[in-house]
Length: 191
Image 1 (cartoon, rainbow, N blue to C red):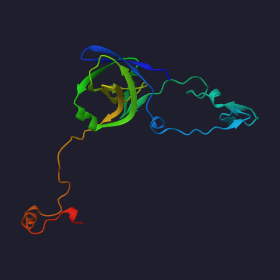
Image 2 (tube, helix red, strand yellow; image 1 turned 90 degrees about the vertical axis):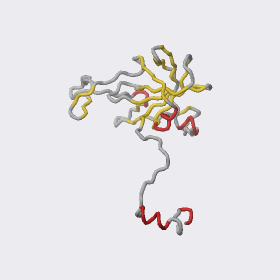
Image 3 (tube, rainbow, N blue to C red; image 1 turned 120 degrees about the vertical axis):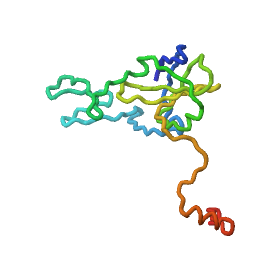
Image 4 (tube, rainbow, N blue to C red; image 1 turned 60 degrees about the vertical axis):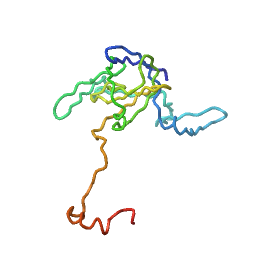
């Protein structure tokens, strides 16, 4: 897949970035591909029609049509009775980025990872939005820039603050527990 160009803007300065292919499970763990051959020629999947004719997978395409067979209008997206406007793809617009603390990465639920080739951006973490295609819902994005490379992380930021140790449940009365604490401490390590 050819790299796609993203137009980013950080603190008013334009930054050109080249988005590489998405990192998937096959890239991380490898892939086993089954191949069927006949007389040394690789066979591909397809469909057998009732009249005996075959169609290769590359010969079939789909589109939205109305009952008469004419191309259908683009679908409208509604949420809570309100029509939502489709946001353009991130490749068609300039996306602003803002620096954020590294702790933001701990609250980010990553769904897609894309390596980036970019220059002129200092190492750190930057927050913005990313839509690969037109979409009614804008996705959160983080751009992680390190000395050895950069990555675009697409997903959603969750509102879960990082805090210290807290008591999730209190099973016993605090006053009664304080009196018995010196003589018989209750500890899960005792189990």
